[in-house]
Image (cartoon, rainbow, N blue to C red):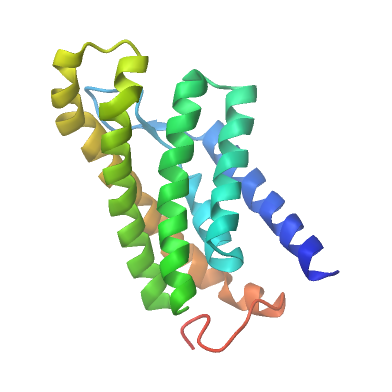
Amino acid sequence: MNKSLRTLVLMSMFAAMSYMLMFTLQIPLIPAAPYLKYDPSDVPTLIGGFVLGPVAAVVISGVKALLYMITKGESGPIGSIQNFLASASFAFTAAMIYKKRPGLLTAGLGMLAGALVMTVIMYFSNALWALSAYGIPKAAHAGLLRTAVTPFNLARGAMSTLITFPVFVALIPALKKLGFTQKNKFGN
């Protein structure tokens, strides 16, 4: 199988896994904002970014968000755009850091940095347009950003990092067999 076809197949596989996790498993984390739900769809997106690179992570995030909006889309286009921004910023940052110096330490550091970047981007995205687009009065924005949006995104990043790291470590032997190896790629 040539490299571009293999890359396309893997991106599709990661996008499908990400979509299925988002579609089937959603857990409300913040009692004051039950519409903010955690799903583990960032796990395959992050792994896809580590294996295929930061641009692939953004594509995987976009395909997942689009499929979800078309098939289930409880929060409509606004929620899908927000999900894309969160997932893409998280995975792109993590994969970019990992790409600079592949290894388990940089994978972990990349996910931590990605979680922080995602939290900042989602703060501003909600502050500048999403909360208003949902019809939430301006007077309530500061409180929601402080008590719901920011804690949710920090928790989302932490949970996805804690799940992704051991899964990625467990997949390393299979990834090596598939030919995804390079010097220092997997911390060896």
